Image 1 (spheres, helix red, strand yellow):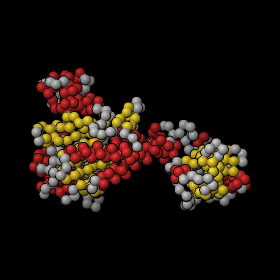
Image 2: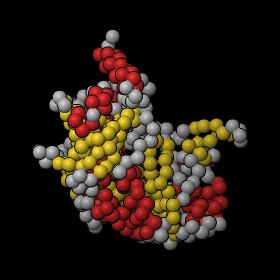
Image 3: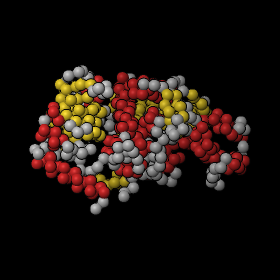
Image 4: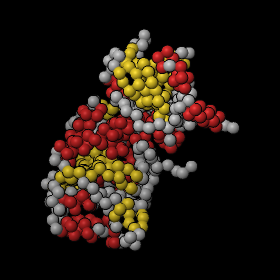
Length: 478
């Protein structure tokens, strides 16, 4: 018999004993005066209260037990005394185990050591835990086990629960911020007949009722733009996107994205939204402007305004003023000297972007708007008025990672068709003709942005691994 089986068998025996003493192991609803955090905030000597939570620690002092009771908001100490509780209830209390949920009635008081506590006069069984919780001092430390058993990770590691409380608050305050600016939250299809709005491999499924192939969306962009055509001037969607691609420290195939579109806006209005929204989150959620990021505790400052710099200027800073006058062979040699693999088929543009993607972007640590990206990489944006080789967009980069693109959106159906055709190559069936038709009905000039909520929460909580900010990340089957 394994040690875990021995523990479980002992708990089953304790459950049987509790049943015999009149304590049903899985109780009913229990009315609480408030959460444990609320009770702590409202503490007043001798005030009568009811509380409920999970037993996460206990000290047996003979005729008295000091119990650490926890719920999703915090902890409170219980004072369980034989003389106050009575012989029968006190005897039954001995058969409780760590992890059990109980409800208590009693009154506030302060112990001689100054600890606000509840003097218990009655207790009820709410739920019996048949498995042992993680060891008290080391918690649930195995990384993969933490992800697979997130419910125990949240119980054993308060800092993990706090990180997800921050995520919840971030999503709530994003909605508040945008709605206060007059944006309306909308919903668009998660199953689509044609994937669009980004370049990514989709998940496929089959729609039995229509007997057709469908795709889980890789982005909601093209549907949100249809709404601009339909007269919704300011819209946003907080949605799940799906991309059938790799798993790593910053990518999960199922992820959350905020997309925002504003009729009569542009890239500059989107920049203002990003700066305003992050400032709002720093004030309302974090209560500070700086974050310690990663294992090295790098200090990121989110105090606006953020740096704005053109893509070409960054390339010249890192590769020399003469970079764009070099021929392909010279550019290839310089890139390989930086330790990069360069495909012999690549032209100067692709070599440049490989240097930007693998070398330059990583150097952008503080919040930075990188503007004027080569048009070939952004087919859904308008070109810059003064140079058609670049599009009027930004990539918002923090700690060396792109967090958010923002566009002056393309609303010319003829230019959009040309860009789609260039991107599709021989696969012309990939062009979303219905979207082109929508544009031909007239889409107003607009600004748009998309921000990865998972990566935003990573930045705001100083976390480098995306699985640490997703409650149930994708994992290989055991």
